[in-house]
Image (cartoon, rainbow, N blue to C red; front, side, top):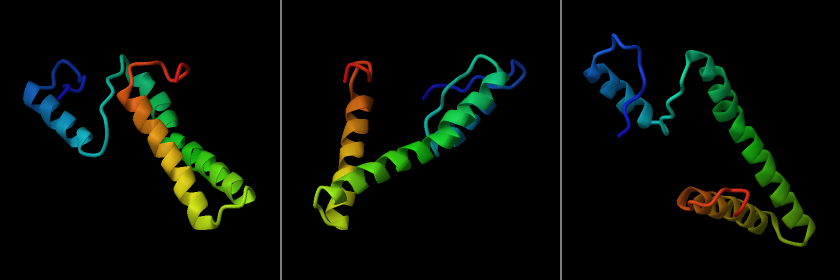
Length: 97
């Protein structure tokens, strides 16, 4: 567990608790300043919409290539999940992958 960055006056037990709570719903990324919280929100908050739009486009392309809707969904989601898993498990830059 990586301990969340907090104000200096926050006791270590409070930092651990904050980290545990945050890790229960996702990964914890420490930022240098509070001003970086807005960009984090932009990426993590809006990112899923872009992912879903990409999956939707893959699914539509599969349908246009002759797959039925269920097959298209399976192919599109499987492709995204596999690629995301590869990116998460690899030390290579995603541009290289």
